[in-house]
Length: 197
Image 1 (cartoon, rainbow, N blue to C red):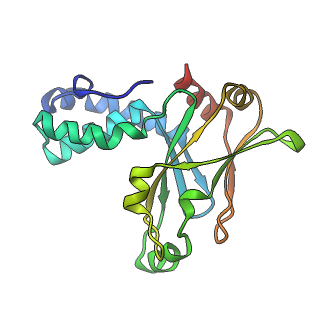
Image 2 (cartoon, rainbow, N blue to C red; image 1 turned 180 degrees about the vertical axis):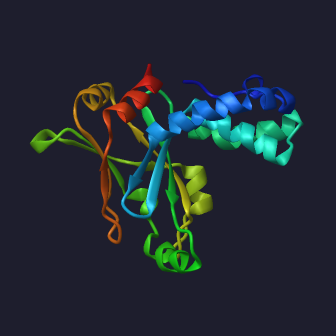
């Protein structure tokens, strides 16, 4: 998949010309890669395209023109692009009111470490624990309250990727206060597998 560099980021005028088509492409891509895991957690499986969109939109909103400022964005977002055999997720706590924030954020401390990927069914089912991005964890993890956005990843061996392609796959949370799961659709799986090609 590969990291992004300055040559991958269009300047603001060029981006305005491509933005409508690119935005439509990313919306369709994210529709396949966005999953609700229970009532308040949504995840997006990221890739190079979604991260390029994030950087382009950030540069557009903040009128970032200099290479140095764009390099800073690249340093922040490149680690979220999955390496071969990885799945990289942005986790959103979809809390829209002050009351929900007050209720859920203390309850969900540690939610970022609770994600499990289950591949297959029955006694030979594989369970993979997520890994929390160390840089982001140092900024987002607190003892008494959690952030509403987290970044996690799964690393799959070749045999696990083969089983991922051919067997049912479930993304679950095993947090004491939040235990939910969601089965990945064939279309979602195909979109993720394409990242490994």
